[in-house]
Length: 183
Image (cartoon, rainbow, N blue to C red; front, side, top):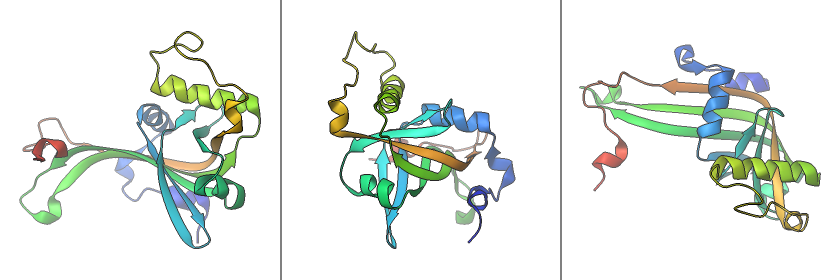
């Protein structure tokens, strides 16, 4: 077993992305997948999230019970991934068929945010990401202390991350989006 930095090494270095790209990708990614474990059983859960650049953490929210909440308390080591599919890329041989993609993988520790001020800030960052056209205290009431009695705010303290992308020119012959061929 290697170090946490070994987990984010990219084999195809030409696809690797820098920190600025990773932060920009996380700002526009619609959702992410959190990997936790209980004993020797891994679990995945897809969640809305927001990356807080100032604190270098990822915030999510959920119930104050269940697997994710318990994992934060008992087994906080996690992996988080956000990705986006691009076009499918035809080729003459099956082994050369491909796809465009982009994504980020982060490793770190999951914590339940106990401080109400930080929890409210994390939730407001989530609201601002997903509802940027709505204004707090104008279009909706902001989070109250009572809300935080039933809502858990989760924070991933990022220890290591990597981003990668595979793209081809717009005029790649025959490139198409997966949804365009579904019936």
